Amino acid sequence: MSKRRRTSLATLLRRCVQVVFLLLFVGLLLAARPSPMAGAQPSPWLKSFFLIDPLILVATFLAAHAVPLAMLLALVTVAVTIVLGRVFCGWICPLGTIHAITGRLLDRWQSKRRDHWSPWQRGKYYLLIALLVMAALGVHWVCVLDPLVLLYRTSTTALLPAGQRAVEESRTAVLQDDPHVGPLHLTAVTEPVYGFLHDHIFVAPYQTFLGGGLIALLFVATLALNAYRRRFWCRYLCPLGALLGAFSWRPLLRRSVQADCCNQCDLCAMTCHGAAAAAPGDRWKPAECLGCLNCHDACAQKALDFRWDWPWRKEQGTEGVDLSKRAALGAAVSGLAALCLLRSTPGSRRLTVVQKPKVLGFLTYEPELIRPPGARPEREFLQRCTACGLCMKVCPTGGLQPALSEAGWEGLWTPRLVPQLGFCVYNCNLCGQVCPTGAIEPLTLEAKQKLRIGLAYFDTTRCLPYAYGRNCMTCEEVCPLPKKAIYTVETKVQDVDGKEVTVKQPRVDLQLCIGCGQCENVCVFRDRPAIRVASANEARNEANQTELADEGPY
Figure 1: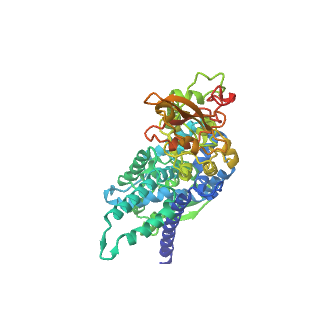
Figure 2 (figure 1 turned 90 degrees about the vertical axis):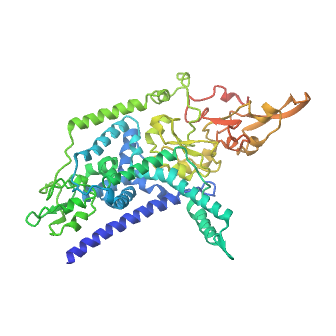
């Protein structure tokens, strides 16, 4: 009786730990917000989950051959895995918890057959091999499928904006209709709720993100697969689970079955989240076990338990995953082939050679690929960036957006500035402070304010002083630099009646403009601004410079 009670408490403890870490993940997600104070330092806790992720550590080291010191915390996760097995997947991973909850809700659609280990579960190991080969050759695509990155990116670019939009639309509908019963108005309830959500949950102005629908669709698809198999993502696809499985091939804490008590009812396999049981009885694959303890609870004969043992001892019935050498080689070749496809675009040519402006003057650069201030040179940036979305989450204007085709397939969902949606605030350097891998370097506010990320230019066919002979000082007025990067030149033009009038035509100072995009963001033309910012003159790229940039104003 007491032993059964201890087992129930262990399972209850696991569920509580799962909920705590899921709430912690959500709390840190909501805590990543713009600061109203210039130069304020964000809490280092905001990137905690990324710092304990060994897949990010390994991929960044292979791709960039260097990692921030704080990322060595991921070795703690590795040590825990070596001792206890894949408890990170079963107890800590917030995406794993969401899949466990979804699988429970979709139980009615799942197959009721006894769910033993399937050879298809080797797929995640082959996927990991392919992604690590790509990382070793400089492509950080492994983190596109990392569960922590996937969940954070989806929450930032799709789930939170959708929730905020729903709240805003609901509030507007209530205010317009003003439902009431006598003196009792519904707004008396909805307005305090909206005020709380606005002040403590959303905080930042309503943000939208390019490609958020596609990101959400992929996330929903991974959840829907739970209708076919419980925790399908964790069993068949998760590269982090495969990496942790490699470290837990013979953990110190192992499942033990008393053969004389086991009647091979297979209830343990029917409740196993990871499908770690290879057959009824004592055949068990520790690399697939998530440590959920459901098998222990399900055993009516009390023949199954978890015990400590030395790693050099092989427990009866314990089996490895047994990867095929031929299939592993094929996965490595597939990773190499995928890398070649990712770099088959013209823009990728400038990532594979030394950037010297005189030698590479014939290369073209994507004008809309404006990286955040502090971003490393493009190749090194892509070797480090996980596309997690943390920098986009803290951007106060929502100007940082996931890249789609601008950076090629290799740079999918990495951050870029879209000035028409939001500009780079002059007194903000949050994006570099929160980047977990150092893809965006943490600049001081003074250094950031002097860094060029692009260059503004005028479309004279649309600009009012040029095309229509009317004065407009909007762009010059909002330029945040102490010495304006936009100045005006008085020019005589003829109006519609043929009379000579003087207008102030704006110009851009090549030496002063930092490409923050505030001028583009406030231009009176909202469809296509008359002043726009391109990636030219960015400080991180010596080849993408204007030849006359050092000769002063035009």
